[in-house]
Each structure stands twice: as C-alpha cells, then as structure tokens.
Image (cartoon, rainbow, N blue to C red; front, side):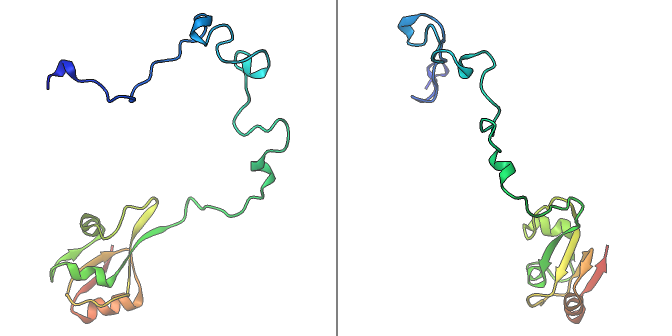
Length: 148
C-alpha cells in the first residue's frame, strides 16, 4: 500500500451538482427548480413548520409541564455500591465517578446516599445528603458518614 494510491471507498463521495450549465447536463435552464412559483424564486420557500397560513401543529397542540432549570439534582447512590471499595477508604463523588458507579449530571449539587442494600465494609463516606437508614447502616459497620 502506498500513500499515492489511497482513495475513498466507492460511493463514499459524490460530485457536486453543477446547475445551469446547459441543457445536456439535465440541470440547465431552470436548474431543477421547475417553472415559476415560490420555490423557483431567489430566497424562495417558507420557513420550517409553516403550513400556508393554517395554524401550525406546534401551536394547535396544548402545552403541558414545566422544566425547572434551578432544581437541585443529586447523584444518587445506594449502600450496596460501597462494598466494591476497600475497608477504611474515603468515598466521595469523585471516587464514585472514577469507578463508574455514578454519572455526571447537569445542575448536580452533590451526592445523596440511600440505604438500599447491605453494607459489609467500614468506610468513610463524604456526601451532601444521607437518608436516615443509610447513615445508620454506615455507622453500624464502623464507618463514618460525613456531610460535605
């Protein structure tokens, strides 16, 4: 294989339409726009969603719901996820992200630990919020629940 022989795969490239270059090209005279009318004119056509003056679908359909851009969103994790860590280790949001146990969330304000599952290792957990059962379970096995 030589660099001067490299070319795109067959069908990967198409030649540009050369409009208005004579009748023999099939795209001469009106350049594929037909005769007269709105679509044949320069700058012709209508904006996306325009339905000829009829009330557009986006305005006919009722609007529902509300998205609060200022809502506090927590990265939620259950106790059972902490069993993959060694005893005595410090677990925070960064450690969980690194292990792939949580994902980065938009407008994230911190980590919330829930008490679902069984915890078997004594670890120090740093989070913004704990459920009452989670805090109790962490301290029961000899760990610490710290609010950051």
